[in-house]
Image (cartoon, rainbow, N blue to C red):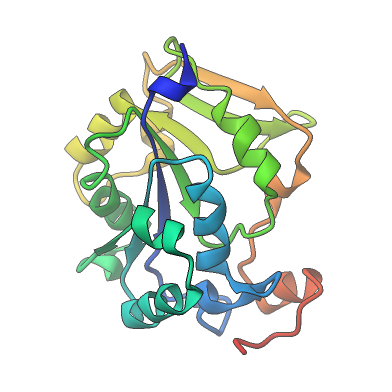
Length: 207
């Protein structure tokens, strides 16, 4: 398959309360940018569209994108407000996927992984093949995130009830997975707590 001929959408889930962080995670800074903008910037380099799912403090996320002054990013980004964000991640996943109907593949990304370099996304999207439905990075035989999901999995998620579970769907018989051995240990880095954030070498602040 010529990857230049397929449509890849980025789906960035940024709707939760950030309860364990004790501060609003999407707006914490990494390399000078809020997590949500940092990740969206990198997704925009390899994706035709970037769908950002918002919920809690949605207006604050929109303000950060308005302030980013990146016309290319703004043109590619679509925002989806999940009115059911209090119900958990799966509801946000379904809300976002409803806006990805034209995509052949969706790069599913959570807002707590800002440390992956641009090279990861370029190499990752090259792993897409017709014979797979799911592509996941691994490093030293450990699975990480984000993941790429094909149309078959998108349909299964959208057909599920609100109490569905992505992990269970990924284990369904018939789903063809590719595990991509990569050289990016950042696939394990998710920033969920103040201690996780301090380990990034940043001060614990939204400023």
